[in-house]
Image 1 (tube, rainbow, N blue to C red):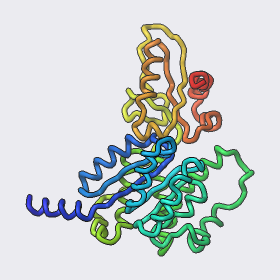
Image 2 (cartoon, rainbow, N blue to C red; image 1 turned 30 degrees about the vertical axis):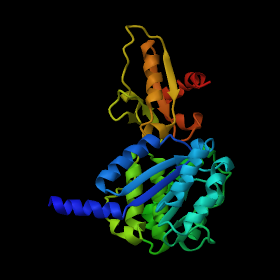
Image 3 (cartoon, rainbow, N blue to C red; image 1 turned 120 degrees about the vertical axis):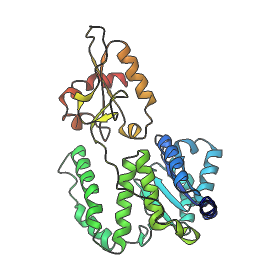
Image 4 (cartoon, rainbow, N blue to C red; image 1 turned 180 degrees about the horizontal axis):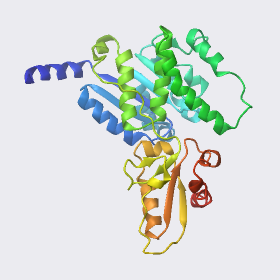
Length: 322
């Protein structure tokens, strides 16, 4: 048994797979590090790493490391590269790797980057056809009928439905389905979702000497989190849709007021929240009640109307961030 396990581990490492994520900044770095550790324990030889444009745009050494990682990536995920200062230094490297990697997945980025997506039969560098053309017709073209917040909510709802619709369409639709699932995994950027993102891509696209890695990892559907809610380090689960679940801080019998703190949801899901925890603790130490709230997108007024208790705290929170 032990000898067999050792042989398996040696084979896994010999046929290892390198998955590289290139993204805008480091807010998911802590979640990625934990996910990488979990994946390495589950499947020795699988390496997950992240490179951030906010770092390599200001450092030639980090840029060189990122380009070298892209050049040897077996699966490459590129996200949130909108600005030319971020994507131009690596665009040629992504394009050069596109035809050699097992898969290249480009999400929420500039058109020059997105078109480099290649996942199985899905090639976004070619004219839209089949399932992709169908989805463009399904999306429609009326962009003026609603607010940006309402449009974002509908897009998220559609994003959740699409994988269920595409599940029953053969061919390229299955690659497109995984593309949208990858987007869901990323937007729900917890360590669990990064593990499942990696597992899903490895199970479908690992090729060549790495093909034996397919099916070796369990991949679950994206873990969903509230799009709008409250956060507190002392609350069970830390995140909730209900403000009533927020713990009441001791105020020594004095009601010194309420402060709202608006936070970025992605940082909370990634577990990158120590800076928020410090602010909350400091305010509570002054005898203030704190309502730490997060919207899915950074447009405080429209989405926060669901929670009147949070809306009353918004003016305080906006003062805090000035």
